[in-house]
Image (cartoon, rainbow, N blue to C red; front, side, top):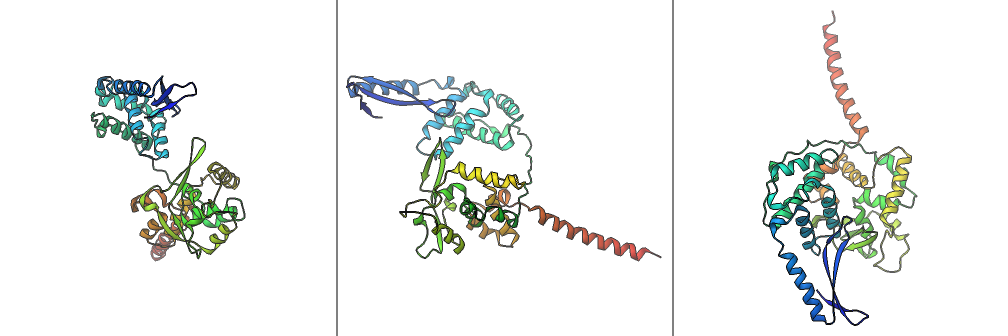
Length: 348
């Protein structure tokens, strides 16, 4: 907490006093003739605010405080996700004091959310609620809450042979291939710099992310998880594409394009060809392709930077429709042959 001198000669201290519904900071200002007086005003306000009786602390207040105290600890993406959860889930209980919160109240909120939200979204809301209450020394047992049943979604994705002709030679060929060939997330693609490539061009070091938050890019010198920081072999074809990108410094980004532009162009290309997929589907394509090639899951996990084998298998390995049909044809042929043989033997 610092005091700044204003053009008028007074001193002003600004204090973050929560966030509005759009996630923007609510700032209170304290002005005085001297630096000490301004600081004293801000400290007094903060102390009075912090002394707020926990019996009156609502769910909304608890969530706000939880997010505030995590501001310099969590990534901007995580904070944004928390604010989205706070503003859109379990709204039925937001004004209930946390010390008076009952299981039935939470269940009613979950029941309301289940009309339009998925099981996963509701679980995220409950997890944040539990953490926020726990920080106020109020424990809730979310295991008593009944969630809507999980809806298993089977995602079909086009084959490599179908996707490649759509992107080769386009403006987004390089970012698409980095995702599909090397399994980079879009934030990892945009975070790559020329200095991340070895001198001989044989390897590439994935160690940085660039994300889009509040209409501006945020660069972080780390990846989503520890296992996501990795060194992969760089195919000569990709190295040649990278060499064609103009740059003046090793610190220049290899893909200096806004996320929204990549997303929009990819959507236009794929939709025009009848595919309802996102850019992130290319990362799914990587896992599925390697799986179909018979590459062991532990290598797929390492190359793709997944933290656990379970996450990689349950989320990213999908069945390609044409391959599924091939398998079904094999099964059909097997049983048809058996039945035909039995039928033939039973003929007089």
